[in-house]
Length: 456
Image (tube, rainbow, N blue to C red):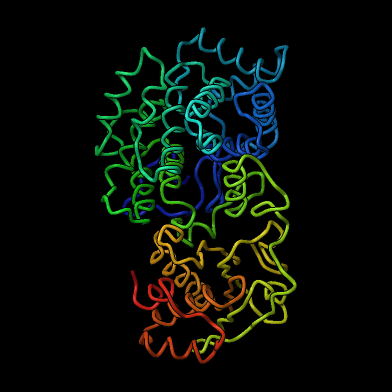
């Protein structure tokens, strides 16, 4: 956000706040705000291409403009404002206003439809044609130019492919775009692949925004499947300049689809927040609920709490650093008793579990780690363990006493405790022995334990 329409960063982009809002550090802008308007409908399991879904999204856009928007694109504002004076169902009003603007100007291929399409890619993971229909329908609400719809279709399909097949392929949706533009899109994608971001002209245009985002992704891809690609790609997207928040939002959505929430580093997840008062955990809930066909309030991630009264508390000091407290999910209710000021959670939590009572959202961070041995259930495990250890070290550097816990405290908690000790410079064998002595009931075996001690 701070770099939008300003000089690109020299070196690494940081969450320092400012920008056109101005925004707090880590606060998202209109790109994510509009995505959330769509996501809150998609998370209910409503077909986004249906009249019901389009009406709900249209009403959400209008309410956002009236009460939550911190920055609005010129084209989007024009359509949303004009639609208020038209008759018909909400989506009919927006579509007519969008078509009228296109008829008057012939210039409605801005990047505002592309930037909000990520959640559409999760809404029909088993149906590429349904994904394409929804992407184009959502785009048409404010952007009548077929190129805007095409860009949304291409990116939504790429997200669907990244999630279901684990690969990055922007050409996967070429057969779904407007027939008249298929060849042009193929040429545009080819030109952007491996190119320098920022070299395609004004990225307020949906084609060049897509090209800059794809260039940022492909030029930073080392082909090793490393989670660090997400960070490299986002940095490159910001350095493309001009409409930095939009290009980074576009690139970040596809990188996130490929590598998952666990690839987003602690320091970013601690800070990220925004309208309408959501944080990282809420984004995960919306995404998972959308991808699974709608919220199920009796199941994770939409259940109120994942706690279990039959799981005993632990509350054992780390043998190397007693201001790290090793616990179970039941220790979440003992924040005051344990005198902790930060929490690192290593298991699934309910909506009411995070942040824990008495804890700020910035000081309660969750990580995605499984107990299972299969490598595919713990993607980029070494990165995640290192990031969890880094979170503990960050909190301790801030003078905070920290609770680190998983569900039962027998596998993930001791593994992260082991990685933390090794990162402090303790020999792996000594760290293992100390943690086994402190937690005699742990499993302490298998791939998770091995990677914690010695790396991948």
